[in-house]
Image (cartoon, rainbow, N blue to C red; front, side, top):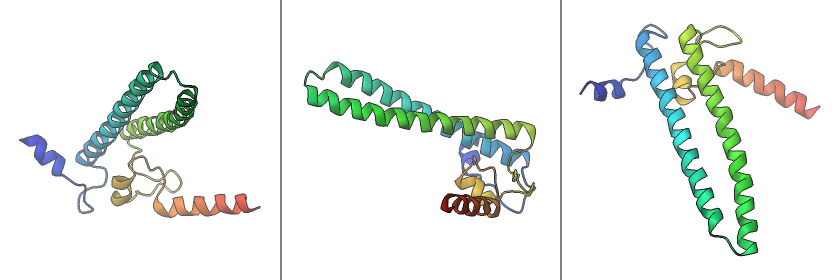
Length: 138
């Protein structure tokens, strides 16, 4: 029964920022997200291995190779995402989680709820993206 109450909990602005309850909430959110990625990638890997055994036709094999290349790119993105999740979990342990790496100010709870691996406040992220655009346009 206590699990249901915990799952319904949402961090709110009227409680201390990064209280133990908020840290637990984000830790669970990150761990669950990581597990979903691992489960999804394992299922895809199993499917690729099965598909490979049943492709005598050269066109089917070529199509399968294209799918494998796409899958490898996807797995690389997943690996990078898992690394970011692990980094966020470490920041929770060290007390740095939820604070902007650039300004040291708290990142909004709405932003963290939507993007729990965020390391920059929305303002710092937008500033960073504008600077990147300027450098790309040069």
